[in-house]
Image 1 (cartoon, rainbow, N blue to C red):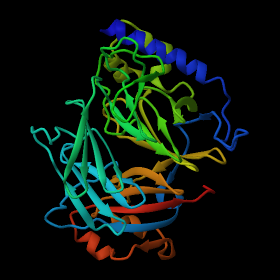
Image 2: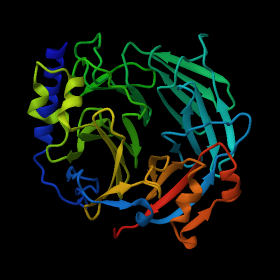
Image 3: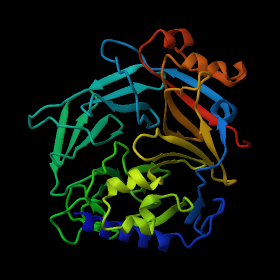
Image 4: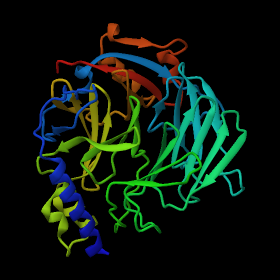
Length: 389
């Protein structure tokens, strides 16, 4: 298994070398058609850190309503679709939906063993009043109305990491999964009946350690999808039934899986993580103007955060420590119209906001600091960052 895993990592190294030929520079280039062109971005993980309060221009706070149905505890990977905030909880069994004011719309749970029930929510999206879930273990896509009514389900033969829909086509991440179809690539595109597959990107085969993540490998971006498999430093853009290189992150030799040492057949990937001192987990959240990056070295170290400004190429490490040097309980979720959606623990929000001027802070209608601090639920914050840090 170790030998096969190193063969997989060798493919990653070759692909990265090919994508990495472009030099690092700010991303203000456009093609003649007006599309974003491929860019390579230099990322220095040793860049000086700046206190998060000094990076913030404006913040708008949204409470998450606390009721008997919405005692959520934590809210990670929160998405905004223009109408609703959504996130999963309770071990991927429940989907919470809140409106723009933070009022609970529904707590959706159809977990079970019945034909109209799912075993877990590994991928999901909300289109108007229709919820779509994909359950990896059952290889099945479920559709429900927001009020809980079951609509339909479809099954696939593939072992899947994540699924997303774009313009009536389903895109499946098959990376690091052994498939029955020997011709399968890293990505499969299926039609509306979940059939007639087309494959993209050479398969990487199976790999010898867990690579799952709750972060969907497909991210909606403008009128397209962005795709990044977990052990890659490159991002692909999906549009018009095409897959093309979009971004390459050059970590200046600090990304484990593209190094020659990662091909060592005598050392397992897990041991390489332990002894390398290199970045092995790298999660970019990509917006049109900004990129937020979570990364991790080893297993014991907490996640570190970087903020990259695409028009200027400026990058900084985000210092999220409080006055007592412990860290704020924050989650960086997703970008929308130049603002980052963050989650903050209700016990931290008072101290967090106290670091800002009053004219930097606003509360959406129906939200107050007093209500949030007295709640067990976290709050959401729309954060606009300064461009001159």
